[in-house]
Amino acid sequence: MKKSIQSYTKLLSKYLKNSKLQLVTLAFIMGGSIIIQLINPQIVSFFIDGIGKQKPMDTLFLAAGLFILSALIQQVLAVASTYFSQNIGWRATNSLRLDLVKHCLGLDMTFFKEHQSGEIVERIDGDVTALFNFFSKLFVSFINNIFLMAGILIILMIQNTAVGIAFILFLFLALAVMWKTQKGASYNFGKEREINAQFYGFLGEHIGCTEDIQTNGARSYVMNRFYALLRNWLPVQLKAFLSGYKIWITLEGIFGIGNIMIFALGGYLWFTGKISLGMVYLMINYIQLLEKPLEQLREQLLDIQKASASIIRMEELLQMKSKLKTTVDNREDFPGEFSVNSMEQFTAGNKINEFIKNKNKDNISLKLEQVSFEYEENIPVLKNISFELPAGKILGILGHTGCGKTTLARLIVRFYDPKSGLIYLGDKPLKRISLKELRENIAYVTQEVQLFHASVRDNITFFNPAVEDSLIIRTIYEMGLKDWYENLSNGLDTMIQSGGGMSSGEAQLLTLVRIFLKNPKLVILDEASARLDPITEKLADQALSKLMDGRACIIIAHRLGTVERADDILILDGGSILEYGKREELLQKKDSKLNELLKYGIEEVLV
Ligand SMILES: Nc1ncnc2c1ncn2[C@@H]1O[C@H](COP(=O)(O)OP(=O)(O)OP(=O)(O)O)[C@@H](O)[C@H]1O
Image 1 (tube, rainbow, N blue to C red):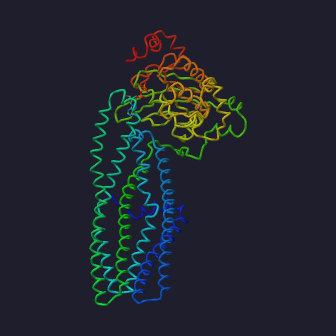
Image 2 (cartoon, rainbow, N blue to C red):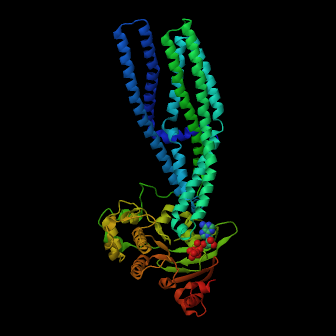
Image 3 (cartoon, rainbow, N blue to C red):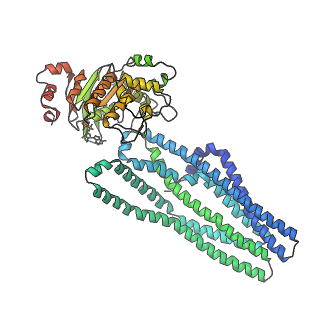
């Protein structure tokens, strides 16, 4: 669990490069604070000896005034140093969070399947938060503490060599013991972060399924698992805490002994007349002052241990690669780089009519050649699927639950790559199209509509502020959803709760507007099986007709009525094609599966 110095410095130089000026300022502030800490005891010592030697009152007042002034400056420097270190820490950790989120969003679906959402959150936030001190002030403060300790020793050596040597010996002893006790803590901190991620993964998953847990009466089962998790969590947390506590208690012990030794030495030297009372004060003060940088060094050692555990986990995450191999640049869009093709284009001027008119012109076809796929080794889900969807045509896919319909859609949008076979969009194999381009050109409407806790506008435009309201409203009207829009309580500003707050029908209508605005060349519609009320169904039908008009479209049909729109029909069974052809032709063939389905229903025929 150890990290090399290079990996620390690499990380620091990458994430602190934009905070150089702030770091230098922080170093100066801390340096100033050290000088004051060294000078302050000297002033008091001078004051004590001044009283003994009956120095003039003016001199003593001046010393007292200087002491108060330096204490005030010390406070100001403390505030300034907190401000700068917080600033540096937040900047660095935020850009690290950004990189991790970017990276995770670029990974394929296998990653999201293998890691619960809470676990990913803990990795992106928890591990990075553990690095806050590491970035904010660790190294500046480390160097400053070394200087503070060196300053104390040099001053004491100059003022009294014997006392100076006693301090040096004590310091080495303290450092050696501290070094020995801190070993092994990193392992415990790594375990702590790992189990934290498990805990948040569990919470995220189960909170997301609250409705199902409650309706299925699974509360006690969930609570049992929760207790088990907490039972495992406790010893790991305790071990991690004790690792830190062990170092602290050792240091306290060493300084307890150190204080006794310095008291005894100071008392002896004063009684024998070798040093003044001011010097005794200085010795006592400096041993206490020495405890501070050592205590901070202890904390820093702990922070480094925690940081190294977090860095290891972070690097693990960053090393995870998407399994999707592409011969072109595979990066996707990131914040600030909105480039949804049609949206930008039409916000510059008032070209709405042109936009609506020009939709669908740029059509595209889809072809699958002998495509096979499996999620897990040797468990085939799709077997040798081949079909061709010409531009502007509609393909209806039928098949019973679990036959691979959704998986087929996932391959076309490249959530996964086929195990064998090729998929072409237009005349290009998918692997030769960047994910960004591919996903701009394909719209995939899943059964589960994802809504954000945001306004209707943001849910439709995916937070792209460049899309004008007039375009959104026009699109809504164009899709025949005028009544729906006018019934929204606050127009486009109507707020939507994530995971609720809208009926499933309304959510579907909103998704359709989303896609119509996106203007994709190919639409894949995993038709929701949830029953819509007749009015919403009519609205959705209207909108769907507009959406499909002139575009290549795949409908994964759960209702047989839906395939009436289709030009071609593909019936899947157990991951293989059972029947494929033109709908009209299949309808005319008496013994076709389609006719059977229409007569008896999907489940009755395909079992
Ligand atoms: N992420 C996954 N990991 C492993 N197996 C999966 C995964 N998703 C689906 N499967 C399996 O692959 C098979 C096909 O699933 P798929 O979701 O494609 O079926 P479907 O025809 O769309 O079903 P439905 O009509 O219920 O949506 C099923 O046996 C399913 O259990």
